[in-house]
Length: 218
Length: 218
DNA sequence: ATAAATATTTAGACAAAACTAAAAATATGT
DNA sequence: ACATATTTTTAGTTTTGTCTAAATATTTAT
Image (cartoon, rainbow over all chains, first blue to last red; front, side, top):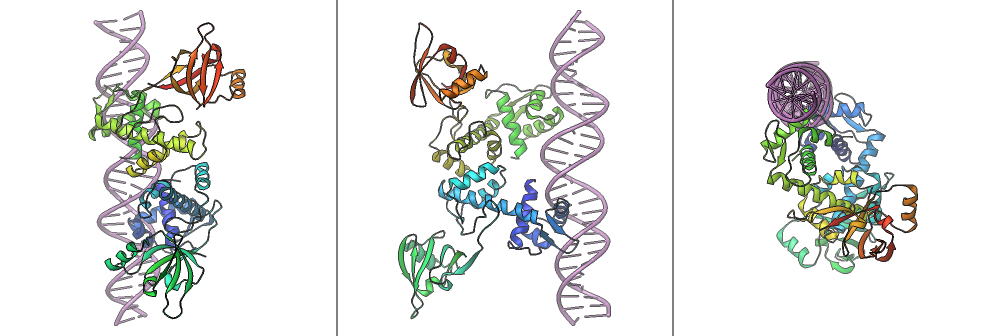
């Protein structure tokens, strides 16, 4: 597989949200910063290779083969992200560009050894699940922290309110994107939450909780 | 720089033995498994970009810029080799193909962090020196063990006699390619050597020593 | 239901990097 | 020194992946 083919397969996978949703030519062109005519050409080639199902004007879905390829690329991408953060001190928001390159390296032995070396991680630094060698993984969903049930664990992946005041509050209280959060208890009276964040307990207001996004693996 | 351009620069560097030796079109074609006409085309392009000096029919040398590019690729290649051997349990003879891919990954931060993470290694698993960030490195030479002076340290990189008997001897005595060897003393009488190999002391005959190649960093 | 808007495909061209075959320059042997 | 052999370059194609512009299909709105 060429680099370009892999990029298309990955884009189709993500645009179809991991399900077998039909993806349109235009959506791929937008997602990949290219022209629809280029997409048509490539999609024909991928179809000839048995990686996608394609009928003129009808959009594209991945075949089983195509989905396996996509999962293998996603697996590599996310494992390398864990490596960059855990071993090379990258922060969670610096890793994407480099992982885009590393995901194309071809060596089954390397990626399996890397997986073991990292301790078989299940999620990447953005909270997204890492497919196992045979392509299995837990679905993950994004929720506001105040909507999560008691006992739920997730990774802090984003803010709804991006005002300076809120970001300062987070910084002051040592809450950062990438932190692991568990909901310990909720107060019915004011909707405030008792959480464990990076090992320490905290009590936060509903207002705070309703502005923090959590990535949760079911 | 494209992948292909980087491969040419690296090949010219290696064929020129790291010095500024002139390299011929045919030599590059042989070294890269391609045709001389393809080399001519690419060399013109590299010349336009200021990476090589080129005059028709006169062969090629790297410019200062080209040599810096070459050293940066060699640095990346060798650091990744150390990573694969030290962290992912590859053996020294399995790493080359994967490192050929990894050497093209572009991220200065990553390679510097990797360097630090590996403990700023000075030589790769084959005994070749790793250029520092600013392109400095010790020259390394290959010698038979029995020709090394007392006090010299090197890495065992090859055998002269590759008979089954000799290889069995090495295996039985726990001597493997990649091992670090220091010459402690030499007996004038029979030319035998006292060496330290992977931390333990050994006494080996001249016959053994004259069939083991050492890579030595001056 | 049909015209207008939007989406998709086709046709033809281009750049990068390779190739083959032929031409030109350099090197070699006697 | 000159004919021959070798090396290198040129000219013309090919493949991959892209593009623009034009043609065709589908969707939307009235």
